[in-house]
Length: 166
Image 1: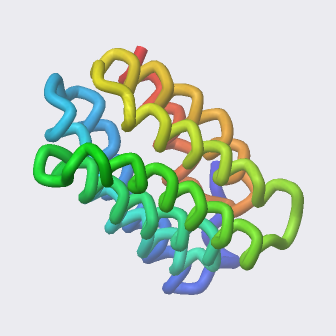
Image 2: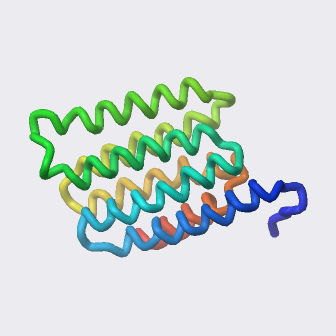
């Protein structure tokens, strides 16, 4: 199915770490409360950062790092004054755009930016069902990007996450 013979041990380790990220992502969509969803997705981000870095996708690692910070801020939303909280999605989107521009190599690199955009909007929503539905839209962008990045765990993650949401 997948040929690992041309991969270095670092790339194989990266693929392995991606499966831990996938497990956390799938568990997040089984949660009923938004804070638990965000906590599991934040833990998943730690694995995805390592995964993308080890397979050579600086773009993926950078976007996951910003996603992790954004998720942590969303978890603490009740501690951040509402007058200031609107900055969280705004700054996140700017950071996603900067990382995408700085690491841009091909048109495919724009896809995860759109995924992060949709996820950021989804997290700003109050209802968990809206979060799940908008999160589903991110799978198309990440899945396509993961094909080109040869992220086996990433491709499988999007398939399982989509099925888990549905």
